[in-house]
Length: 332
Image (cartoon, rainbow, N blue to C red; front, top):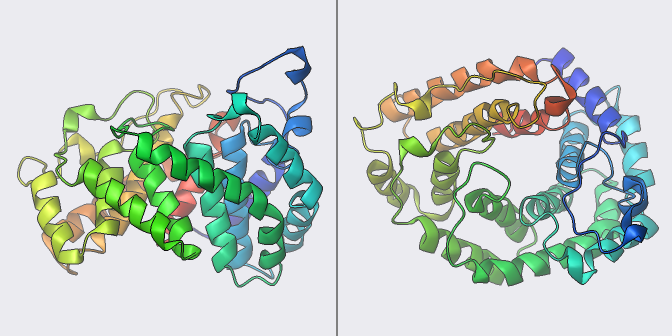
């Protein structure tokens, strides 16, 4: 990512995390009193079209600040975090999540993005990060406890290409568990990953789905790379995506096309390209330099990045979230 694109992404993100409308909220409304402005209900995460996008946009801003702590937008990011990550605002967010009717709100996608944000704060070398984390921690702990309670009840993994994808949730939850050295939670997550996906076989007909932004097949592969030893993973992968059944001409290695970037659901497909690039780039590192599989994955990741990285700002329906997945793809 060149400096010009970096500055453009950060500027757009700073703008939309504070942009209250348009806004989408998938929640239970218990009475007319619940019909309030987003910023009244979620005084921290009220922008970026929806709660989860606002959460992961803050992760993006944190990563941007870590990359360029003396950059032209650094003070703006600091001021934003200082004004938003405060005790009273966290308490207001907590009040919402404590309501029994909201027990499933943003499960699991928004939950695990909050945990990943916490993990980034925990591992950050920024001098302000410990205070931001201390203020946010009550909400993080509540969400972590909800996830710990929910996952053992999930008898069957969800293999969709959208927000409820189980492999994606486990990946981000592992970041949190390991950053905070939560050993028992880490063990639970790894055990669930193995129980869900150790015997999985990739099915190319499952994707792309017309409104996917996550790759169910590649997310599973990235998760298994995370929980298996390198040799165990290579053996698993050879059965999961056997060559020549999955050649470089398979749909899993070809970028998807986006027909209308003003349509929020169809714009998801740019996210699919970027999330595939993220997974392939990480997985490629598990194969020897110069090997056929590493080359195939690296070349496909580059094609997927090229297909969508220049469309982050085509329309607000993509702009409010896509850059996060570009950061994931390049953050290796």
